Amino acid sequence: MILNPKNLRIPGTVKRFLYHPSLYRQGEDKNIFLFSSRRGGSTLLAQLISYQQGIRYVDQPFDLFQSHTKAGKTKLHYLPAVPNSQFIALSSEEESLVKEYVSLLLKGKLKYLGGLERFKFPFLANRTLLKICNASPLIDWFNANFNILTCYLVRHPIPQSLSVMKNQWGITAEAYLNNEKFIDSFLNHEQVNQAHKILREGTYFQKAILNWCLENLVPLKYCSSNVLKITYEELVLNPANLIPLISTKLNIEDGKEIMRRVEKPSRSSKLSEQKARKAILEGDKEKIVSRWMKQVSAEQLNEAKVILELFEIIAYKTDDYLPVSTLLLC
Image (cartoon, rainbow, N blue to C red; front, side, top):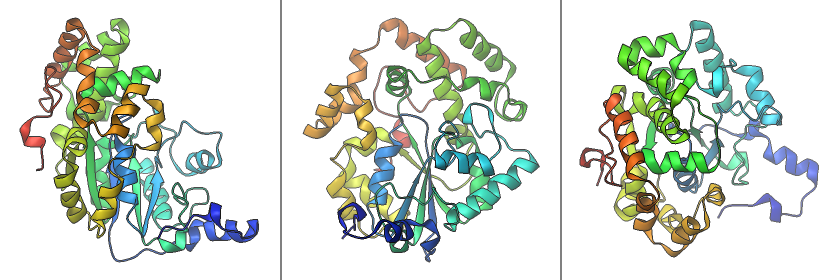
């Protein structure tokens, strides 16, 4: 049973003590790092995983945009101030800062970053799940420096871009195109030139697709470490087969609890439009992943195709809502 402190009649001082992350103690199972990009479905997957008793869920520990909050101030105290809150390539000094920050976070030493999104007491948890949406280029680095289990969630670029546009979120592509180490490692001259042209002259849609390509380029094409790659589409369409596989790979015992929750929308689904929420609640799974095909023009489909081809990304096609078969796990 998951305890909810909101329902317990205990004094505030005692409640604050029980909330404190320093009560957390690491168990034998490895911690889990979930990488994705904005509006990629990571909240859904993270919440499903964290329903396993004993998992402490920390949401977006590298998000520097909420600097006015107590958690945001804690992050800024320890982390380097990177452009657009994108952790792309680290200098030796930045590596030291990130290592210290993550080590303290995993030990439960950082106040306001205790992972209380689900109102579970820290002392009931023995492993940590980090949901990371702005450091995918560093997947190999994290695997090399921490003893963790790593998974990466990807979603079709068009619906994800449309969702970013609907929320009127900013474009982070400039941070990637100004990072010399990233350019030297992963981009050619033509890709850089065309990307800058899109930022100067392109539509919001084109910029969002470009953003998706840059944020997902490394885990899709260049990731060399042992990473469990999951597609949002398969998670929605085939949870009965995929959830047990994920549970096995991540050493999660209670896969049945995850399955019980899989039909429920994540809290961030309030950012979706009414039809999407209705589809989630009614279990119309195909509608969730395919409805975007009626929302884009032929011109937009071609624009997306050109950009995906520019970066030689073959994980998704613009005329299909499903990923390529090689990305399917079941």
